[in-house]
Length: 294
Image (cartoon, rainbow, N blue to C red; front, top):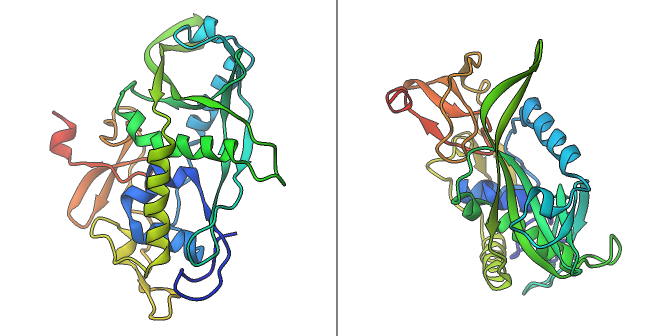
């Protein structure tokens, strides 16, 4: 479980690190990352839209058990395994005690015929190669947890030879029967580099942050504007926002988020209307009305 206090205040439990936090929360706000891991204080969250969960579930049903040569011929021969798998690594020691471990839920894998494995994440979005950088730490964290599994949870799964995103980018709608339509689009594999060295370096930065004092508020973090930290390290709210910024119903004509390509929603803030990412607060991409309509 996540440790109480920071690395400067006696014995603590090992830090529980979630791979999903490495894709967005770490980059968005070091203070909020620190508070979540070290004190169990989370940003208010917005559940993923039910339609995206439904699309992901349908893709898993379609791909589960399929051979790579039939659906992803650019990959070595193997079989896709699309079932949710809890992963947890053994505790790694840190200076001062306590340590850290990776814990999360992995959606899909590929079991190659040569005995190695790939970590796979499904995305319904634009097939942008830059997404490899966005999700690199997350997928490397899953690979680390599988190769260094806690013996109490599972045997290590090794070697992990590939990491990647399986991206579905819809580009057409066809009528397959009266009243029944189907989305069509390109399915792409975006390779994500596996680097134990880079991941070790990243974890060093994470543990260094967690071992220190609470970081200052991020100027770009909405929730840092409402939350404060007491001198003893406990968390206190200054004044909670009344709710999320006002939203209008989705029309289907909203632009894509410039950060993660999710659909955006029109919102009203202190400076008027703007477009905000539908995945807020996990993603904080915004567009003003002028740039969205150009």
